[in-house]
Image (cartoon, rainbow, N blue to C red; front, side, top):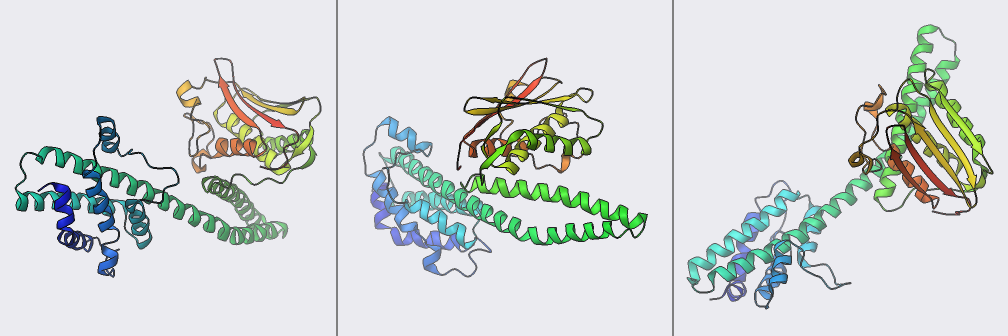
Length: 375
């Protein structure tokens, strides 16, 4: 008997073994009924049997063996995708879900060989069956991963939102204690709380911004008509206070008026300058230029130091990345999101950001159109 016919004729026996194995996937399966344990297994098997009965060329065979079988645009989710979605929602982990497919593969082949004594078509049917199962696994894993990513991002969004209020309370209380003049020890403790609260706020803001981009929402901006020059002076003055042993030069040329989100611009500039302070030569100044040119303003941040290798340069704007040999003693508390968020802010303004590095200097350049109204 051909394998496709065997699957259809012995569907209930195969499903019983699927259910028996799924019931062992604890703790998620502990309270699941038979229907839920068999979720979409019959539809997956029917799709496999149909596939086995359909002719295919070598190209089709290779695509399926790698999990890349073509799908019709706009087609509904496959049974394997829906199965993965529901398994993720009831608490299965990805290893438990993949184990279901391994058990299915083994049980179907064992039952078929024991009962049907297949002969001439054995090798071809086994190969086709494995390809179909691999395609189902690929579809399930992709859907499961997407569902897990969505759940994680929603959790991070809620966590970030809920953390804001207690953090603000800590910061306000610390500022109140600092203003009491209740003695040197109280003032020092209040100052430590204020510094720690500021760092926590920066980390929290980075996490929330990162989470928005992962949810496809992008960086939120509220453009107004502003001059970037005084905003840049303000940012660099604050950074100079925090890093009194370093020197940052600012040069402004041309008209820097336009439609931008001021706080977001300052965040972008601050991230680029902090990066230069961390990784640049400690005995050299950091140079910042702001140049109005036509329909855009060009921001450049440059520092001296060892050149960045091309392979690293290509990944600098990826999230959760940090360069080697950083100089900042506090860098271990960073999430590695500074350059990523700087790029997302530039994109939200309709601009772009890139980097170049050689033996003389490393330069980060951001070009920001003057009249981008919304992200």
